[in-house]
Image (cartoon, rainbow, N blue to C red; front, side, top):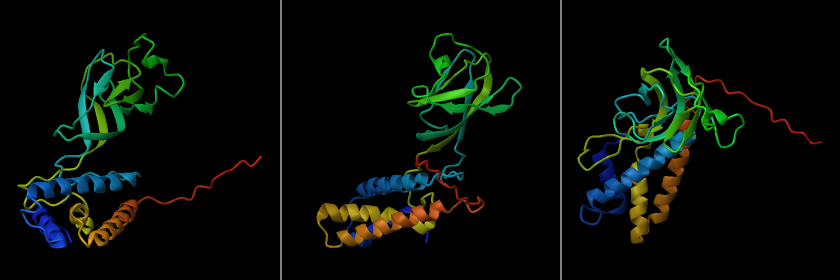
Length: 235
């Protein structure tokens, strides 16, 4: 059953017999958002070809920025709505014909043949590789042309957090697991206050964590699973 923000806070109060004085709405909201981060981390762990995004976001987790002649590095901290970017999955560059082509990921610090990134020759042209460092990407060749929206980046990003005015807002993941956003804060409150149901709440919380992982680990029903043999050399 899906729950909205108000229903989640009410469930917390029922779980631990709290009220607006003993567990303020602001404190509940902070703990709910901590639980929301945990759910997203569990979902992101499942990986695969299906990319999760909070359904409360009103756009897709794809951002674009202008490609600038003579500029090698581009920083990405927030998406176009101000949501923190957590990971960059894929980078594409628009060539001079206006067609996006993938720029392959490499690791400058550990792979061979990376001198083009740092040798100072500053070769220009169409980039073919990129290195992610901190919150930015570095291109192997420095673009020799300007292109509007010339960089396209596939990302994952933080969830759409709750605040105390979000009475009717629902979490942006499966309603089967909205209760987790009440269980985690309930456990945290019970632990802080030495309540007798602390262990029960912890067990329920851990059980639902496993259920979340199982559910999102099976989302790619259209992908055929393959058994890949492990080859060992015993010589």
